[in-house]
Image (cartoon, helix red, strand yellow):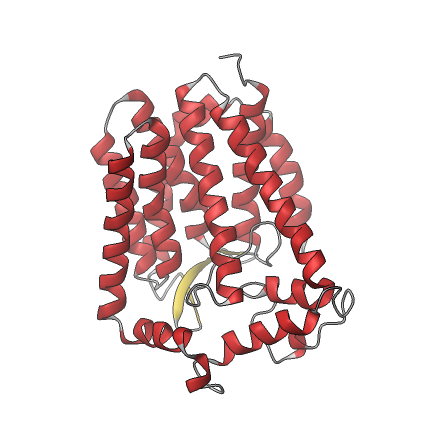
Length: 310
């Protein structure tokens, strides 16, 4: 809970730093992130939770490095594309980061990091064929991983037919949809969710949108969606409106990565996508996620100060 009080001043602080300042530390931040990902994979430093090593213990705080990799990968690629220098080396470092995250294992976040390459290239001005090719390549690699991993195949199978194993693999999705359906139009009331009392696993993170639907109903969920839409639209307006190529690439990349998280989290909760551990930005519980979002938002706020002034 204390992270919330730290994230707000962090956003304000970063919004006061000129976005070009971050170019000086793009390689350092990405390199440190890779080192921390390597440490996370070890038994000595990595925290094993639910069969995955996604956190590294700092004593007073458990850091999920992959949340920051999402931001730093965009920063690194924006720098490389803007300066026309070390593009392949930058792409290689992002691919290494994605591979280390996949090893945790975390397919959803790994694919999101890979998407960074595609989206930043598209924002840079690559044609639509390159964009489609990048998306197809990322999709192919993800599908090959699913085919080679039995538990991932089970997720696909029971996502398509959760009622074939209602008390096992299909349980989470069924309970999520029950929560959404029981909310109706107006909801059961704020704090009155029954599903979060034990029926629905991880209601504070992966399935927070299901609880939102249950407590404040369809109308309340639409308000939440409109707020996300307004945030994303404003961030894209800020980024695309900048005359500075670096700001445009960086802003669009950060915005689309966050937008994808919103899409995936809500898609998982409603059954549109297979279950994966993706948080809902600004809403789900998670200190690392909130701090990385504070950094991204602070950078976007600073870019907004210089729209048309570069």
